[in-house]
Length: 327
Image (cartoon, rainbow, N blue to C red; front, top):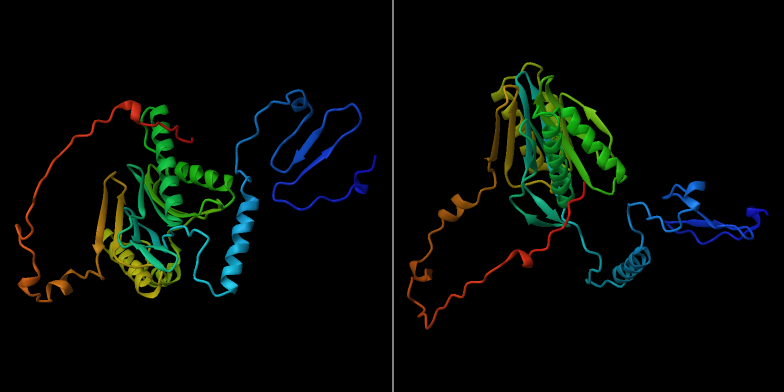
């Protein structure tokens, strides 16, 4: 028996090769399974959890249709686009804590999907995290790790969470999905070992730095940090430097925009999350400056109400579907 003489199968993302001898059990080998001799006696064993490749042929057909539409000049779009944060996120350490900053623009392709997106996520009372990448991935990844940190504090007698523990949980989860979870994170917090700032890439690689930036506006923000950062900065100086760095991303990167959010985490255990710390694109003063005719305002009673009714709707627990959370 020479397996080299067999014809090669067509290449597929989930390639499986079966080698069979007369009167023997078929052994299936795959890069996503770990088959051993003991597994042969368990033909009904459940497949390992992971990504499903059931829709690979469907996705290939969608890509072919999209390419054909693009070559013909059609405006029809067949591929759904994920909402991405675009983003400028930063983190910086100073002598008494950590300051995190982020812009508030979320984009879907070339359109602004949300002007006031919250990109600074809670992980623990002493740890916060800024997220860049796909908005849903950053939101749910931080929610999952926050829940795991909460359970860990309960199991360890309510002790304070370590920043390196949160970093390890995040990097292990992201590495497990090999970059398919598009979450680039700036993790900051203070514990018994002092202030810490980590940058975490979607593939799971991490780095511990005194200051860092991530996102599409990271280069503009880093230029501000490289110029103005000092080792013994006060809290006021650190907050102002973070604001300047985020504003550099807002005004020099099309994926970043709207307002500046800041979060200060101190070594004494207190935190300050400031939504809309800087609003350089606030249009309310401009709109208030325009004098509109009072004739355009519809007063109450202009349109008569012929009838109104209210019917209460009762919801019971039988109407609620509970789904177990992935851990």
